[in-house]
Structure formats: structure tokens, C-alpha cells
Image (cartoon, rainbow, N blue to C red; front, side, top):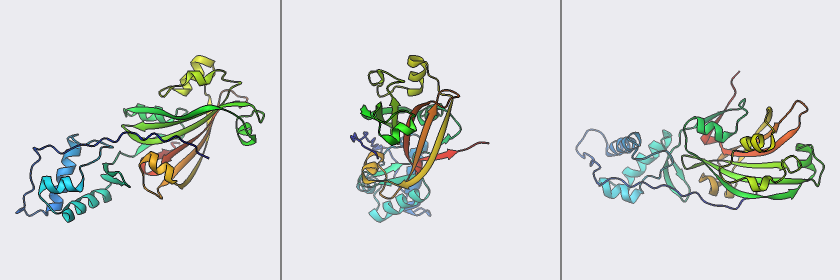
Length: 261
């Protein structure tokens, strides 16, 4: 069960330059094709980047002196090509290239994104202590009623929401952990440097399901989009001592989960 305090990431909106070239109405290429080319040029020149909102239909109609039908056809075809994506109630955005993360890598998703030179940011959605129920006690090999720290964080790459990481830690293993965690804290690094516990191996279980309305708000995705739900337990020694149990939720349209053998 996911529990969030929603903090909506700021959306970047780029405006067309007043120096944009007008469309050639007497050219052989249809106007919608010319508009597609103009938008692609803005993306390739970095005037529009991944995660940026493109101008509205009204702005495009005015700037290029074309009909709304022309604008909609250009946008629809760019959506079909995977260049743009519509987000319900938000607008149309430049698609973030689909990311890859190896399921055999001990590191987290955010480490994988950073290695690929994405600008990674983390935001705490919820954090607090609680008692372990029977299920969480079993997952962390502790007695029900033991004290846990629960933390949910939103991970973004180049300002696009990618993953919600909801983690649980035994406070017997990590006393005072609540005071050590901030938005950008690396959990693996903290476990090793502060508590002397290094991650040795991990177990992942992957499920797919449909997004909820609340998750659509957080990820700016559409109702009915498929989500990857990755259950992850990391261990610190050969005795199979669980250090962390987490659930990672990611829109499947933004991520490839890769196994290399």
C-alpha cells in the first residue's frame, strides 16, 4: 500500500523564439510536416529538452499561422513516433529517452541514472517511524512490533518523475537513521559509512499493474498506464541478514529493466 503527501514537481515550459522560421505555404511539403520538422529542430538544437512542455496549440497556431487541425496532426504524429507525449491535464511534453537499468546491478535506480549523466534529484514524500507488522517483520527478519523507519522518496531524472522508492529499515540495525536522511542522501553510502554495513547482494521481484489516479498525479502520466512494481530486499552478509526492504514504482514507458548474462 502506497501512502504519499503529493508535492508536484515544477513543470518546465519553453516558449518558441520570436525568430522561428515561418512555414512555407506554397511548398510541396504539407504544413503539418513542416511543423513537425520545426519542432524536431527545436529538440535537436536543445531549445526544447526532454521533459519540457511544448507551446500550447493556440501558441503554435498563432506563431506559425496555421490551423488547429494542422497543429493537432503534427503533434499526434510526433506522439506516434515517440517524440512527444501528452499528459492528461498538463499539456504535451518532449519524451524522455527510455532509460535502462540492470537488474543484476546492486546499485539503486538513482545511481544508474547518474552514471548515464542524467541530473538526478530526490525528494522526500513521507518519512517516519512505525511498528513492524507481521509481513514487514518477515521481510526484514525481525519480530512483529519492532521499530522500523519508513521513507518514501520521489526520484527525478532531468526533472521528469521516474521512480517512487518506498523503503523500510530496522532501527535495531540503524539507530538514529531518521536524523541522517535528507532529500539527496545516498542510502547505500549511508549504511556503509555511518553504520559499517555494506550491501553484498539483493533479491528483486517484479510485478506489473495499472497506475492509480494518485500515482498519475505524481508521475504526470495517463490513467491506465502500466507501472513496474519492483520489490527489492538487500542483504549485508552470508547469513542473509536483510538490511533494507523497498518497493520501487516506475512507469513502464520510461524504463527498460535489463538482464545481462
